[in-house]
Amino acid sequence: MLGGLNHATLRQNISIALDTLRARKVRSALTILGIVIGVTSVIAVASVIDGLNGVISERVAKLGSNSLFVLRFPTGANPNRLPEKIRTRKYLRDDDAKYLEDACPGVDYATVFAQRINFNEQSDEMRRGDNHIERFFLRGAQPQYIKALPLFAIEEGRFISEYDEEHARDVIVVGRAIADTLFPHGNPIGQEVRVNGRTYEVIGVFEPDQGLFSGFGVDQIATVPLSNFRKNHPEVKERWIAAVAKDGVAMQTMQDQIEDAMRRRRRVPHHAENDFEISSPDFLSSLWNQLTGALVLLTGIISSIGLLVGGIGVMNIMLISVTERTSEIGVRKALGARKIDIRLQFLIEAVVLSLVGGVIGIICGAGIAFLVRTFIPAVPAVVSPLWVALGVSISVGVGLFFGYYPATRAANLDPIVCLRYE
Image 1 (cartoon, rainbow, N blue to C red):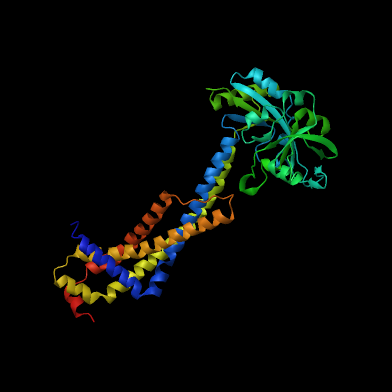
Image 2: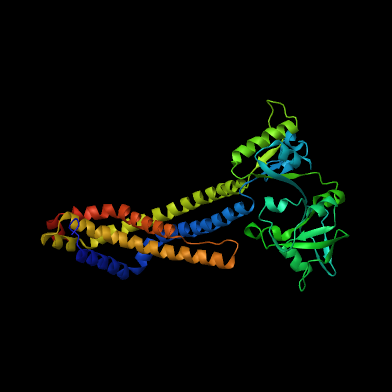
């Protein structure tokens, strides 16, 4: 017995609530629709975000959890929209990496890479017989590059060696999608391809990586020795540096060392701002958190509106139920039922009503997550027990909050007036 409510009474009240739902199917369905919409949106969006959070975390780890990047412009910025003082910054140089290794005690090694992207103007072309590909990234890199960015793991063959870099050899490592396009039925290792009319030997193939949300990833990247890239594309002056921390060195310590070294290297005045940027793979998480923050806010607004409408519907149907069952309330009070018994009866009915809406919402949200995961594999939506529990809690909370007033009204009815009611 708890507050006058035993198991038999609880079962009886739940049975009455379910009978009310069955007797008034259309009204009950319309009543809980708002709750269904609210809980569905919460579960569906939370499932998508949870799944993508795992993808982003894995991506950050593969970009190098102990790596920092030195670049001329802020990460992800469009140079054409930056202020002139940033657009006119000096380029990074190929020997800056070696300088950082010597000047920064916390840097284990640093490597330079460059990239050519001309999708909107003149496109690069890679050809093998009748097969060819145009939309890809042509990147120049040093041997240490693959150690600094674990994302670029080799599936077949090997990566660029010191000998390749020293002699500016015409060798190339391609993404999985490029290899499958140019060599659909054969092993690409040791074969030749033509890049913008120049012959290269394929020495390796990267592990498959479609990129975030099926965008550009390692699959669309072809890498040649940086020395070879510099020789064949002298017009590309932009450089990026990846620096890797020594074991036991904090990332902030390495960042401070790199900042001091680069300011000395580029002769930045003492009170002037840096004319370079230092970024970590965490920028991807930060950007993602900004995007999901707006999405969560929008979902919260939609869910709140749905739950408010559903809650008002629950209150309305319970008030109607109190009116319809006034005589029943009078009989129960005449037989000795206390106020708490009447209040609990109607509260339980309100909770059951909203809980049914919540369960339907959870099922619908899980169904949406399943469809997203099935038809968009790059978005691995998953329904976690935490969000299921939250959906149930929201439903119960709505029932208790909006059902309290009708339940209290029923509990406070005068039994004599109730018995006279027709």
